[in-house]
Image 1 (cartoon, rainbow, N blue to C red):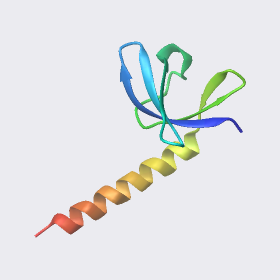
Image 2 (image 1 turned 60 degrees about the vertical axis):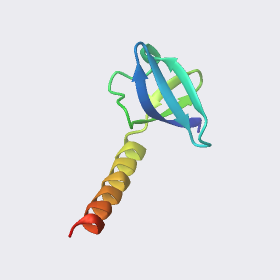
Image 3 (image 1 turned 45 degrees about the horizontal axis):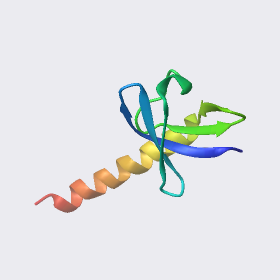
Image 4 (image 1 turned 90 degrees about the vertical axis):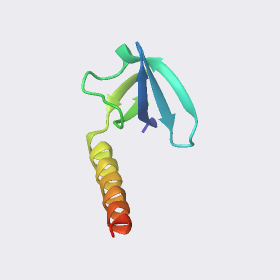
Length: 76
C-alpha cells in the first residue's frame, strides 16, 4: 500500500495534502481523482493518486462523533 494523505484544502490549482506523519505537501489538483474533496483520504502509489472511499467515510464518521460530543458538552 502506498502513502496515505488527507486533503487539507485547495488553493487555486493546487491541493494541500497532510501525510500521516503530519507533514504537508502540495500537488496539482489535476493529479487527484475528480471526486476528491477537502477531507478525502487519497493514497499515492505507482505515481498516481486514488481515493480511499472506506478511509474517507471512517474519518468523516470520527469527525462527526467528535463534533457531536463537543456540542453535547457545551450545551447548557
